[in-house]
Image (tube, rainbow, N blue to C red; front, top):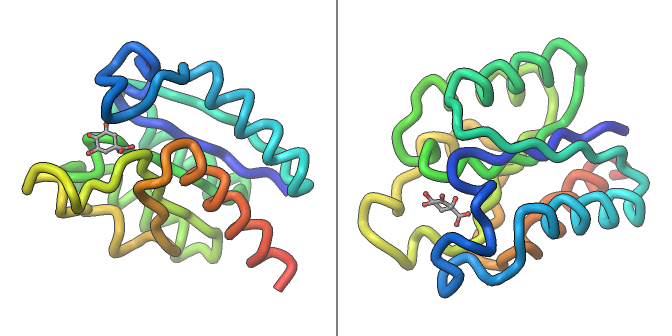
Length: 147
Ligand code: DQA
């Protein structure tokens, strides 16, 4: 089963960006880790990152059209992108899984991060566990597929 792991703006800067919040590991490390977890879970994982709102929206359309489940860290788009939310809603209403993930726990940070416009249309959310948020999200997808 294919799973797209989509990452929004600034996540390509992992390792360089605010390491006290997001850790010292790089985006490439995340790509390797997610691929390895996919192999363990018998999921065919493809990891992508963009800083571009239209690109991530188009990837969600692609997920719908190709019937692929999604794990997504929408990064800052989480908090204000109704375009991304509407695209995410198409994924879940078409019967596919969409798990929202965050490295940090946005609820424990600045007030603007406590609101997600994506959460209400996601299958579920994992936040606050660093890279393990992605691992837990992939486990949740694998579990749902075998349940
Ligand atoms: C983030 C949390 C967001 O608030 C922030 O804008 C990010 C990363 C996280 O993974 O913790 O870019 O999604």
